[in-house]
Structures are given as C-alpha cells and as structure tokens.
Image 1 (cartoon, rainbow, N blue to C red):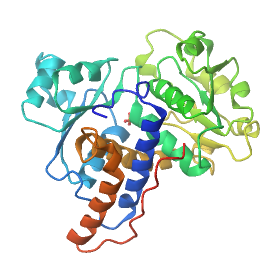
Image 2 (image 1 turned 90 degrees about the vertical axis):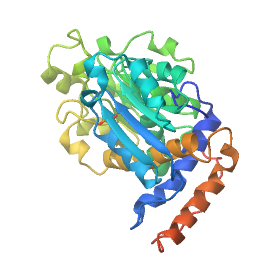
Image 3 (image 1 turned 90 degrees about the horizontal axis):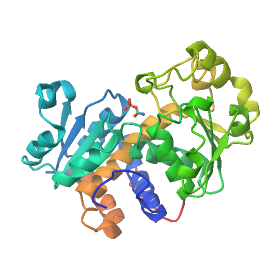
Image 4 (image 1 turned 180 degrees about the vertical axis):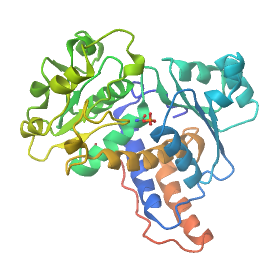
Length: 344
Ligand code: CP
C-alpha cells in the first residue's frame, strides 16, 4: 500500500490487515512510556486546511509515538493564504523530502491531486464530502473490539448522509467486511440514489426507527451546517425532534447495541446528552482507537510496511516494540503478539 486515499480502493484483506496492525499498536498507548522507534528518522507532515480536533491531534500523537518527526501546517500558516496553489504548496513540501503527507481539505479529490505530484505517501484525513478513511478504520476497530467481528452485524447510520465523508467511508468498509448497513435521515439529506451508488447495496429507510430496529450498532452523524448551502430542514429544533437520537429509540435496537458518533457532536441536536454520556456510548473509545489506527497507517505507509513489505510488518511491529522496551529502559505492560488477520 503506497497511499491511503479512500476505503473504496481497499480490499477486505487490506482493511483487515490495517485493523490487525492497529490492534498491535493499541498497547503502546496504554504504557507509561508511549513510544516505539518504528519511524525513527522519518518525517510526517500534517497539512490541514479545515478545522480538526481529533484527526489532526491523533495523527500528530501517532507520529510521535512512532518516533517520527511530525510537522503541522494549517491554512493560516501555509502560503495558500497568500495565493499559492495547493499543488505548488505540495511540490514545495515534497522538496523537503517528507516520508508522508497527511492532508485534510474541503475539496473532494485534493489528496488524489497531491498523490500525483508527491513521492511521499499521501493519507486522506478527510476530503470534502468524499471520504474519511481513517475515521472508518477507527470505527471498525471499535466495533470489532466490542462485537468481536463485523460480518453479520446490522449497522444503522443516521443523519446527514448527503454531506458525510464518514458515512461514505463507513458504508464501503462495513459492506466489504460483511455487515448490513441501513441509512436514514431527512429525505433531503439521504439521497434516494444512494443505494445504487454503493455497489455493495445499502438499505435506505424513510424513518430512523426503521433503520434502528434490531441494529447492533447505531452510528449518528453530525449535522454539517458548514457544508449545507440550502435549507435541508426547517430548523435545528425540528431536526432534534424528528431525527435526533433519544433514549426511547434504543429500545428498538438489539439489547446490546452500541452507539457511536465520529465527533464533533451537536449535543441535543443529533444525539441527546443522555445517550452521548450513557453506558452504550463508545464515542471516546473511538477517539482512543484513532491513535492506534493512525499509528498503523503511518507505519504501513512510511515504515517497514511500505514498498510491498506488508507481509513482514506484524513481525516488525513487535520487534520495534521490544526494541523500544530495551532502549527506553523498560516499559510497563506486556508486548502482545499481534494476531494474524483472520477476523473481520
Ligand atoms: N471525526 C473527525 O474527523 O473529527 P475532527 O474534525 O475533530 O478531526
């Protein structure tokens, strides 16, 4: 794997391999000394042209936990604000020989353009309403952690599907791994043709209750006011009443259903505080798993796993961890032997 531009291009085997590698890295963040030398001497540039709390921070933490040098550039500190084109910015960054460029941009396809002019591995950290592959991977890691496998699960995705890169990436990933996905939301935000656009087949429901019935996972999406150029629903108050997730909705779901939200969330609009802070909510687990997923992505693209060496990468994760344990003077916690990728 040379780039991570979207989930659509990945095979089920590649997705499982990424998840297994992320699982290997999860232990690192639980230790007192949260660092392994896997990317020592490598440079990761985080190029963010849109606001971000979780993704930017967790890519930076992931790079640092792998001992890479991490450089952060935002739109206000880049020369794009002085009129330079995105591609000229990318060519100038490439001239400084980074190993990996992580990009978030409001335009769908921006990471693809970078991949054409850069030798560095390009990671899509969210491009417009197109894809957000690491969000889908961390969501899958969280589901797998709690449900043990993804195949056979019923997953409801509720809300602003039209503008959601999270929905697209999740639909591709969950369908490839054998889950059944239902989407629901206001008619204006759930395109009817959506089911046909996704080749794996997705159920489009009129009412959120129909999507939630017997669901193992209820995934709530943020109302993306910044991407909505028209009035897609009368008011936020009405959205909260008709499409917000309330405790009574969960009575329809499977008894052990879990609730997820990619964040940032509009409390009291798409999700009630009672659910967001309740026992079924995995919202903060998702954030925790985001670091492990981004470590896996950076490691496989910029470390021992790049240039087609994926077959040996699990072994390298362990040896990097053990080397770290010695070089950092002993680490609390046991190095877990990574599992071979059979679970999905
Ligand atoms: N889920 C997500 O992408 O959050 P941020 O916008 O804070 O990065």
